[in-house]
Length: 70
Image (cartoon, rainbow, N blue to C red; front, side, top):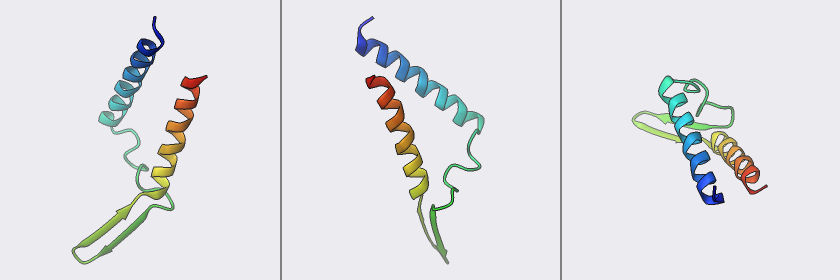
C-alpha cells in the first residue's frame, strides 16, 4: 500500500474513533474545563478561552504526527 493511502486509512479510522467517543459523551465532563482555561461571565457577556485544552490538544496532535513521520 502506498504511504499516502496508509496515512489516509489510519487518519480516517482515528477520526471515526474520535467521533464515536464524542457521540457517546466520553470526555464531555473535563474537556474545556481544565485548570488554566479562562472563563469570565459578567451579566450577559460571556468570554471563554480554553488555553489549557488547546495546549493539550496541540501536544496530542504533535505526538501523533511525530509517530507518523517515524
